[in-house]
Length: 474
Image 1: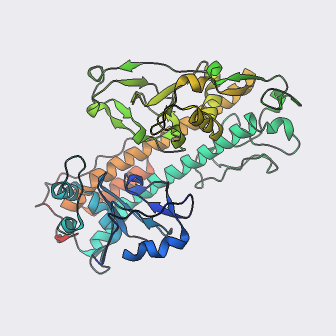
Image 2: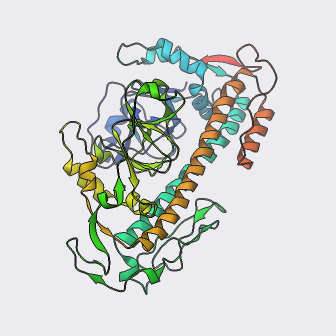
Image 3: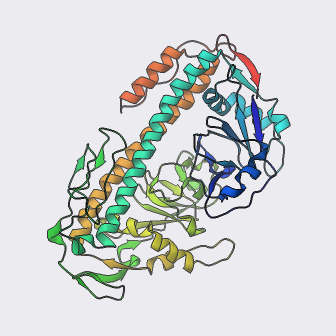
């Protein structure tokens, strides 16, 4: 290594905005999630005196959790405690290869064996330095990084496309059901879903006030078109109401009028070990597509069943804004509330309200408890909303179901690509599969939406490493 940057044992002064602070809890699944904490720009140089992270550096969590790995991009960041930054010597170790190697079982097992602790496992820098990593020739390192990186690039593209779809859905919901743009700005144009899906991702017919442009994540990517709303369904004026001016013919109601909380409690003995499981740890903040889940194999207490397409709401510390659509059938933590529309036409509006900032502020204020506030369906159901006629919400919900299906397709494709990447990694490091075969498997996977080809060849693994591979210490 040319640099090992260790900030364990240090806690910086946090501020509400500034330089993003990379903490152990946001390093997950090979990537860095959105930062939740920041340090002041004026404190940056003083805080980072142990070493400045550079683009391409690899970060490893040293405890809680142990062994999560990610690579820094060119954004300015600060490292928090429980993280160590690694930088390979340019003439011996490719940093992107290092990222993949640190995620391999052969390295993860060493991290676990050298860790200490009873309640929480952690590893000290002195022990980390003795961890051995596969070290093939530099050109082969770069080739392996290129092959596996191609899969990660596609996974990241899917994630960006889903984020664009979610932003579009939120924008259209606000335009129709909060700002009432089809009523207040009919001559200036406004965004709304069309009847179908377009491949161009082109924006709606107007870019005037209230429009929600859609920037397609990639050329040709399937995206809902943001066409004109069915103007004939909207009234021509607003009228007074307890919530302020609302479209004529609409009324004030509550979330409980359009949604329900299905209660399907199950015991661990009643759940198959392979059943998908979603806990709060699988629910990212401000993300509609719940594309991460585990299995019920480790479930030891009662859970709740949910169905694909239902809405999951994190009730513990609701200000974390963990709300999204289930992309599969499964079971969830009892700290997650399952919500469903009373009629299919209310799906989009129910999701829009439950995931809105206004609703999160409301349930946060109504939550009980100080250290670990919780909300409940009773408080959620009492939240006041504007209820439009069913033909309008049916049009929006039909479009939102198409959006949800696209989110689901991207998520499942990404999970399949990640499974292929994880299968290829140990085979490439051991020499069980040659680079040419791995390249072909990746190309086939990226070109096809069919089930991914089986990774690996028919050759027996060589003695632990690829030909010409040595071992190097971290």
